[in-house]
Amino acid sequence: MGLSEGVNALRGALGFLTRVSVGHDDADWEAFRETPAAFVAVGYLVGALLSLSLFVPGREATAVALVLSIPLVCGINHVDGLADWADAAVVHGDRERRREVLTDTTTGVGALVAVSLVVSGLALAGLALATLPLVVAIGIVIAAEVGAKLAMALVVCLGDAAHEGFGSSFTERSERGDALAPLATSLPVLALAPVAGVAALLAAGGLAFAALSWSDRHLGGVSGDVIGATNELARLVALHAGVIAWTLW
Picture: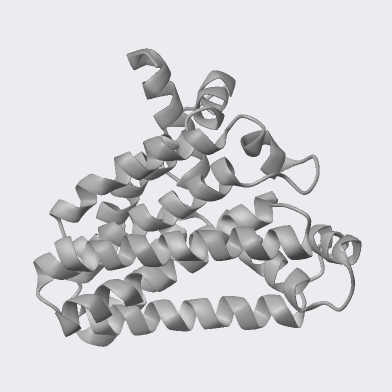
């Protein structure tokens, strides 16, 4: 990939994964779809922006700032995917019924519980991060975000779409071998948090494989909602894994 294509892919990834205004166009979107590593590259920037919440004084204030910074930086598209996925996860029925629920605009109990648990989990992570040395906490936040974006890239590269739609627009452009580039792009984050970073990446990667397994069994493949839910859940488990690993080390 040339320099211009790489820049286009990063602009497309920023436009999709964040609320940062970069003036992306169709060419950027196409380049992003063909460059799974762009997910992870943007994770570094997002993680750095989210880590600014750690400078807010006071444990409770830090926790609130972390929770609020995520929709401010990333928007709520992926949270919407989490909500849809949760409704499909709790519904009784076969694959067709679950896929119907994914596209249903009604918000169910599964969505409310899942979003509430994730927000609560992020707040608890913020409370824990506020007790750590600032440099360590920043490294964990960035590693968790890189891990979350790595999880999305793994789902895109290793998964097959359940149906035509947003998810297939990514999966049809990627093959299993394409997962190597996102993996390599995530490794430099270990310089920021060697022990906690390993834990964060492993937790996020494990979540990605769990999402792939669940989606194959219950949906017949991945979808855009699964990709979004993977991001939200992977960030959460990576944050807590990073904190636990550093505390126990």
